[in-house]
Length: 152
Image (cartoon, helix red, strand yellow):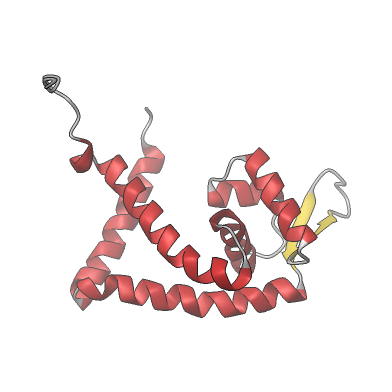
């Protein structure tokens, strides 16, 4: 049997790892419901979700909001365009800047998925009291803001 390295990282207690694993699990759970019904990947839904809230963003802005790498984002945008869920036009004065919006079909799909997403969120949070839900949300916000300020 190999000995554990002295001072080894306890991955299961390491916050970035735990957040990543939790995020992957939650994303995969909710993705099953919209993938089966609409054939969307997690990335495709994230793009649609951002554009549902912020119509008319550029691909760069969507990349920033979703934290999806630009080359991966570009492929997902092309899939959504081919499926007539997303439209791309160009800025009137800056032809290099594309504007992304959901199509009528995309909006309909978005409107069907949003209640499913909220229902999953509510089920997920049933393990918390009302006070804990509020506190958890505040702590997530605080951690997010602090992470933005950190330099590694």
